[in-house]
Each structure stands twice: as C-alpha cells, then as structure tokens.
Length: 437
Image 1 (cartoon, one colour):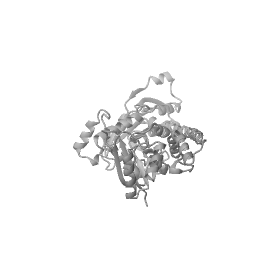
Image 2 (cartoon, rainbow, N blue to C red; image 1 turned 30 degrees about the vertical axis):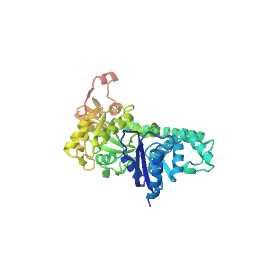
Image 3 (cartoon, rainbow, N blue to C red; image 1 turned 90 degrees about the vertical axis):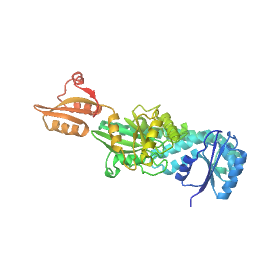
Image 4 (tube, rainbow, N blue to C red; image 1 turned 135 degrees about the vertical axis):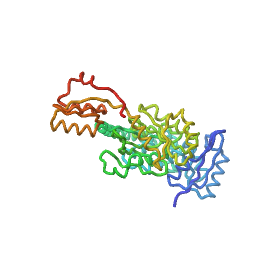
C-alpha cells in the first residue's frame, strides 16, 4: 500500500503558490498525495509556515491518514525538528524528496556515486545542527535525524573526497570513450532540458531504438515514461543523420530552483552536454507560456556558462496544442529560443525537420583530396572513407584521387594511411572549409 503524504508550500506575498511540480515529484517517488496546503507570508524561521498553519496541517494529517508531510520549500534541520514535534509525522522538503527519487533510480555505479554525493552535499551544512538536536534528545534517529556524533561532519567530508576521486576516474574513462568515438568519425549530440519535457521519448524516436539493440557504440536507452527523472545517468544511441555519423545522448533533466550543490553533484554526467558538438534543448510546449519562459531561463543559467557548442531549442509535445497555440508559444519565447524546431516526439511529427537542422548546425567538415596507391591497401582506404566521410569524387589512374569531406580526425587518418601524400604545407593548401550539405 502506498504511503500517503500532504504537500505544503509557502511563498512570499504576491507570488503564486503552485504545487504542480511537487505533485509530479511526489507521485514519481511513489506517494499518494492526500491533500495540499499553501500559504502566502514571510518565512517563519522556526517553522517555515506560520504557527497557525502548522496546527492546520497537523489536523489535516490526522484527518487524511498521512504518514509524511513534504514541503516544496527547503527546510533547515531546526525547522524539520520543530515541525516534526508539532505535526507528529516525518517531515521532508523538496530536495530530500528529489534525493529519494534519485536513490531509487540510480542504476549505474556513476549514477549511484552522484546521488550519494548529492545527499552528502545536502547534509554537510546541516550536520552540526543535527548533531546538536540528536544530542539534546539523546535518542539517535529521533524525527529522522539519524545517528550523529562529533565525528559526523569530518566523516562526511572524507566520504565526499573519496567519491569525487572515484567520479574523476570514471569521468576520465568516459572522456576516453568520447575521444575514441570522435576518432572513429562520430559527432556527439546531447539532449538537455527540463525533466518531463519528453527527452527520453524524443531520443527513442530519433534513434530508432528497436533497430539498434546490438550496436557496439551505444548504451541501453532510457525508458520513456511520463515521470520526472527517468534518466539519471547518461544513455547514448546512434542517430541517423544523412552524411554524418552521430551519437545522441540523454542526461538527467533540470528542475526549477536548482540548487548549486545538486548541479555540482551531477557535474560529470552534465559533461556529456558541456562537451557535445551540438545541444538539443527540449522544452515542453504544452506548458503555460510563463512556465516555459521560467524553465528556459533555468536551462540557460545551467548551460550557457559551460556550453560552447550550438544550441537548438526543440519545442516538444506540439500534439497537445492547436496551431494557433504553437505560434503563440514560438513568438512568446523567441528572445530566449530564436528559431526553435516544433515537434511531437510521441507522434513522430516534424522529426525530419529536426534531423535536417541537426545536420545544418553540426560543425563544418573540411573538404580535401587525398592520393592513394593503386593497391589493395589503397582500395581498402577508399572503402573506409566511404564509411567514415562524405566522398564527393574518386578518380582512378596510376594513383587513386579521392575528393571528400570529413572531420579533422578522419582527414588526419586518411593522410596517415597514404604513403603518397605530399608535405604538410602542400597538403594544407589543397583543402577548404565548406558546409557539410
């Protein structure tokens, strides 16, 4: 039987107290939302909400049979303690709820380490207060405080250091894989965006998942579910883009009011976005316009400091809107998302336009000519170029002359395979940069 929870949110006067995102998070964590309470007032340092509202929540919890109260606000340890004493059930905030979801869904070693790092980063500034409260009560575990002693803070710091060292090792491994894929001619496209914007569904549509289960360069893809945080680690699939070899990666989604410690904990997963050749920023077009704007700002704040690659905004879930509503949203966010591509990943609508845009936005390839010996080795290199590059023309006489476009890594390998190549200076004069049409 699922645990019943009451959701609570306090906002400053004049702000809207929406619990829509928290409702989705609570359900994703497996709770039944029994009821919701909101309040517009200044923050109470002892309880977050007003003392009278605390009594109201306590009566509501008893009436609906809830075993937990979850605040959309971030709570301090003293607030958790005070609220627990007054209401009589376990108290969580939005970030402990998110960490609970992360813990349930972390499959890979890297994802598990990042979740533990996030939990420790959340707990570290609260350790002294929790130790003081646990000592006061002389009851380890009172109101979810856990067993605390004087060594707890240093233990947390030591564990954080060890986790970061292991994540650095895993990141070096992943960077090696990225290098190998680039050396093999692959270009990297990353999906980014708000959680539940349809990134995993879009990935499945673009990558033809059913046809790729044994591909050696891909990982198991994310399951497409209408829930936040279905993807915690990085999943990668090959994507068909005419004339290009592309790998498409999906990563953890963003949330509103994303705290620095949470972003920092998932830094190594976000490297897949930061180091991509192109980023597809996926937005739920069915959201209200103001919410779309807020989410775009959150994404921009997270991405723009580190991403050097082109970013294409993809307005997804167009099947839920009329044409007039689509145009309204395109116009409303044009200053944040110029020239977006409107699609429906669920209905496979307009994906051809998105693929064409990906091809246009990927970095230009170099055009050059290479001379190869008329031999088995030369013919093998021609065959290899057809696989790894865009071959424009091949002429056969005493030697083989191949005119092609490719990434710098492929051009370098082609020249290395050719004993007939001239000096580096002569070769440099024979090539020009052109768009990869």
